[in-house]
Image 1 (cartoon, rainbow, N blue to C red):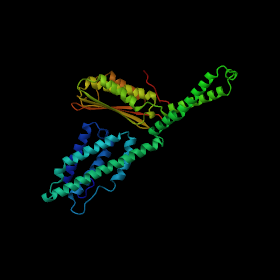
Image 2 (cartoon, rainbow, N blue to C red):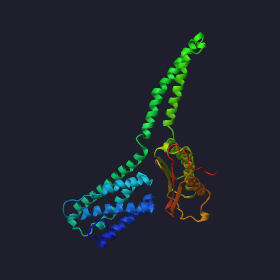
Image 3 (cartoon, one colour):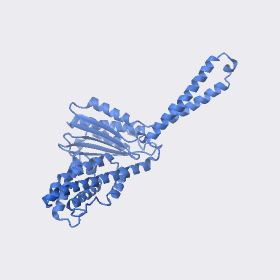
Image 4 (cartoon, rainbow, N blue to C red):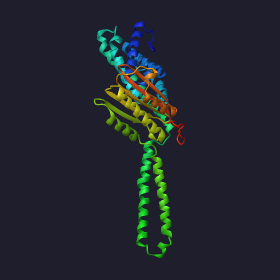
Length: 369
């Protein structure tokens, strides 16, 4: 077992069983942590280190031990890598629960050879260290993940832009509008005077206020540019509500800042996600279908998972219909990639990843049809 001095073959065998159980649990829920070999290698190292922390605590006869000293530092760097890999932070949280469950299932084997009267205290300490170890890694991973995103996002986030737009609209825009109405009323009351007929200061002030009002409106529109995440989520949810077969539970989640997504990209993502859901409704026979879209400054990542009949991958030529071909074409025209994973009797997951252009740059390509 990694990170355990003088480990025996029996201990290594127990560790392998726990790791295998852990990966199987990740695969069962369609986690990208287990489906991508490079990401899984990092995840496996973290898991083995946490298992080793628990094992040392169970076997310690001396002062109580804690989790590995480098756990937080390693996890901090790994959190930044998760953001770079566009792995949603929720996947790390889910993985932590699955890891703890896998270790707890393996506790009887880990406790072999410990005197019966010492088992309760050793067990309490071992489980405590396990939770501390996993919890410390998750917390540090959050910090690394957020630090990476903040470096790209800068100091002005979506909430601040929204608040600023609201302030401009409510405080400046409303006052400008009121001033314009007052001038119009003044013009109406004095419409028969020579000064009114020739324009004059009132007309000039009205023009200036109107120009300022247009500037304020443009500022508000600019600060609120981009599709609200709720728009895409509501469109997909509405489609799911009207198109899903009876007895199928559906869930839609859109996470991240929509202002990072150009309108053209957002339209294509909606069409791609809808087609994935349509395929699942028509062919999977699933009881649960989950669509999730995660937006980061550099990429957009989407996934549609189901627990239906599943498909065999790689797909043979005759197995890929027009729907899947359309999905691939739309994503590839945006410079992205599509990965389809499935297992007969377990379910199917269609995952796509699309690079996003820096703010101000036009989309790199357009669909050919």
